[in-house]
Amino acid sequence: MERGIIAMAGWLSLYIWSVLVMNGEVDGDQLVDITFLKSAIPKGAVCLDGSPPAYSYSEGYGNGSNSWIVYLQSGGWCSSKIECYNRSTTPRGSTYPFIGNQTNFSGLLDTNSTFNPDFYNWHKVYIYYCDGSSFMSDIKHVDPRTNVTYRGARIFKVVMEELISKEMGNAQNAMLVGTSAGAMTTTLHCDKFRNLFSKTSRVKCISDSGFIIHGKGHLGDHYREKYYANVIRTHGLRKSLPKSCTSKMNPNLCLFPEYYVGDIKTPLFLLESAFDAFQIEYNTLPVVGGRLGWSNCLGNLRHCNSTQLGIMRDFRNTLIGALLKLKQSLSRGMFVHSCYLHGHILIIQEWTCSSLQGNNVLANKTIAQAISDWYFDRSSFRQIDIENDLPRNCSSSITPDLFVHKCLATLSNHPTCNYS
Ligand SMILES: *[C@@H]1O[C@H](CO)[C@@H](O)[C@H](O)[C@H]1NC(C)=O
Ligand SMILES: *[C@@H]1O[C@H](CO)[C@@H](O)[C@H](O)[C@H]1NC(C)=O
Ligand SMILES: *[C@@H]1O[C@H](CO)[C@@H](O)[C@H](O)[C@H]1NC(C)=O
Ligand SMILES: *[C@@H]1O[C@H](CO)[C@@H](O)[C@H](O)[C@H]1NC(C)=O
Ligand SMILES: *[C@@H]1O[C@H](CO)[C@@H](O)[C@H](O)[C@H]1NC(C)=O
Ligand SMILES: *[C@@H]1O[C@H](CO)[C@@H](O)[C@H](O)[C@H]1NC(C)=O
Ligand SMILES: *[C@@H]1O[C@H](CO)[C@@H](O)[C@H](O)[C@H]1NC(C)=O
Ligand SMILES: *[C@@H]1O[C@H](CO)[C@@H](O)[C@H](O)[C@H]1NC(C)=O
Ligand SMILES: *[C@@H]1O[C@H](CO)[C@@H](O)[C@H](O)[C@H]1NC(C)=O
Image (cartoon, rainbow, N blue to C red; front, top):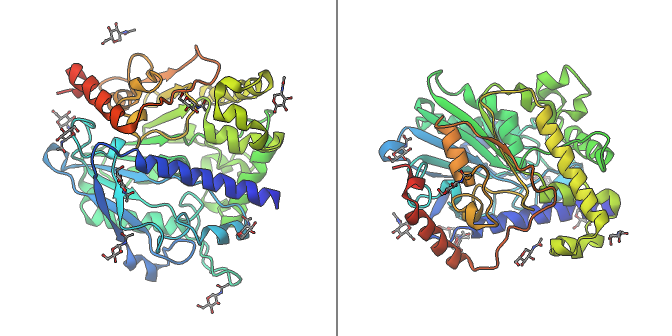
């Protein structure tokens, strides 16, 4: 019962987070129609409840007409048949009738050149997440007890085929990017995505808050082991996990990026908070009584006591340790900051103008600048904030409208930010 509540609370919080992500779009309504891919149904490429995959697409133009961004939505996982059944009645397990008709494009997907100078005119795709397994499952039989269908891998395949039919395969530039569970989708499918393009295309992947750690020997490791092993069992993922990992160790550990990211061949950027709010609250605190006893601290970081700060600092050291242990790669980028956050890339406050939100810059670059420079090979970027070993509150109390005005002023004061 309690596990169920925790799981559901975890899901809810991710949902709230993504609602916040949606509302981050304040610099104008950039609503893009949703396409329901009904032709996927006969192929069995469906959401948990049997509804069709869904995505929003806006066409590229100008010098963006040969460049593609494919974005994968966040939303956690389900780790038991009953949890997946529950999810199948929500917008993270079904596209009908929950998700509405349109998607707000913002942050990296912003279509306004002022706020998104490098990517505003690219082809952009936002893929809805509705299978609870980071698009990895492919179980032939429908669960006869619940009618739940486990077919995420087929959804990924069918949507990619659809995009190829829109000429994505000819792209000169492409990136696969996702947040949280969508970031795990990104790292798990990154090399497969790369193979959709010719050798000469520039193809890169970005994981936004998706470096979910095992952290063996650290607080909560057994809880995390059990949770992700249950995700693997529920969705029948054993055979589809990265071989580079399953050939070396217990396959039940092979959803943890620290055990497979080092073997990804495609250039990858890891954007993380060393104090990732989701991982602390939902993958660590369950073993010390859950978030409830922590509401003072999580509501206002200044109220955290020394025990709580110790737990958070240990989490940070574990996450940074796991990042530093990865097999080295010159093409890998990294922006690891200390703001207490989860998810960045669709939020103007955490992307274009992260400098105005708790001054979240590293080496003098905003998140948008660091990632754009890395993507276009203008410069490499591997920065971890080693100065702050306590979580920072980077949220400001100014209204979103005022924030956009300040952001606009910053962009026009520093024309170099526009890379024109
Ligand atoms: C599933 O939903 C039911 C009804 O809302 C709830 O009682 C149960 O705890 C949920 N189970 C899980 C595992 O989330
Ligand atoms: C998109 O964002 C705008 C501005 O924040 C908001 O008014 C609108 O309701 C949002 N639309 C959707 C479909 O979420
Ligand atoms: C979506 O569009 C349909 C028909 O175009 C309309 O009937 C329905 O109200 C719309 N739903 C939402 C959530 O906007
Ligand atoms: C981009 O945003 C700025 C500031 O809000 C606005 O003045 C401009 O008209 C927008 N451009 C487009 C193409 O929408
Ligand atoms: C398109 O041109 C703009 C402005 O010169 C530049 O910032 C951007 O990087 C270019 N995009 C591509 C894909 O070359
Ligand atoms: C499963 O689907 C069948 C056929 O549509 C239906 O009769 C049955 O009631 C469904 N079972 C559940 C648990 O929803
Ligand atoms: C961060 O600061 C803002 C503004 O002062 C406040 O509203 C918010 O509750 C704080 N959040 C945390 C987690 O401390
Ligand atoms: C800090 O707060 C937690 C949760 O309320 C409590 O369990 C712990 O004993 C406190 N530690 C100190 C040193 O006060
Ligand atoms: C950061 O950028 C500002 C303004 O462009 C510049 O004045 C400053 O010297 C830079 N600092 C570092 C450490 O590069």
